[in-house]
Amino acid sequence: MTTPDRIEPARFWEDRYRTCGRIWSGQPNELLVREAANLAPGSALELGCGEGADALWLASWGWQVTAVDISTTALRRAAARAIELGLSGQVTFQHHDLGQTFPGGGFDLVAALYLQSPVALDQTAILRLAARAVAPGGALIIVMHAGWPTWSTAAQQPPDVVFPTLEGLLTALALPPPGRWTPSPASSGPPPHPGGAQAPAPTMCGD
Image 1: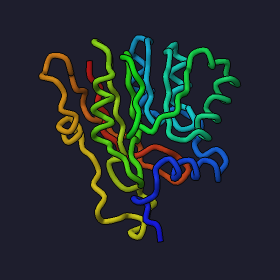
Image 2: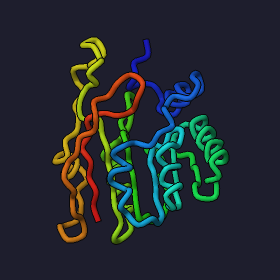
Image 3: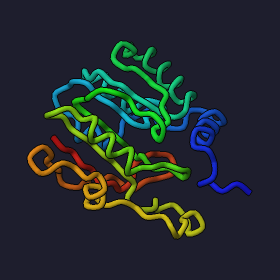
Image 4: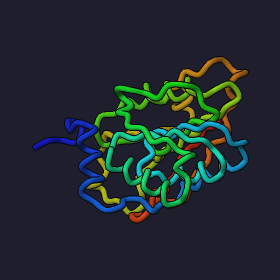
């Protein structure tokens, strides 16, 4: 039997999207909306964009977005939705296995929303690259699941899973000395449910 941590990540995520219809609701993440709504639009990078809801919301607010994902099926769906909404000129979708390649350049906003995976993922290394991709004066928004969903059962909760804290994330990111980065308070989203993507989550925004 093949265990999840031994499955090749690109295969895992491509199979997940390819064998299903649209997975996500198409609505932007509430925590992203709350944190980004008051930022001046500029260039944005979204890591793990899935079917594109968050990237397209940013584009609709005037951001020029680079959105990346490991699944080509998810990216095709996101690009098709961008055309439907008349936002294709505002978003560039790129295929990246972030454990192997990372978008170049600096961005006024870098967003990593639920960058967590049941298969191999060097989360710390990727988030450090995300922090380095933030342009001077820019912002980094990280949203993570911070606990099991209320509807999950004990059988669905592997005992070796460790959920992040804001303090742990800040330590792992090894950010430059104070002065460049100003962490915002941790925030929690609504409890998750089977049909949605929301979950208790710490957020971090720096400049």
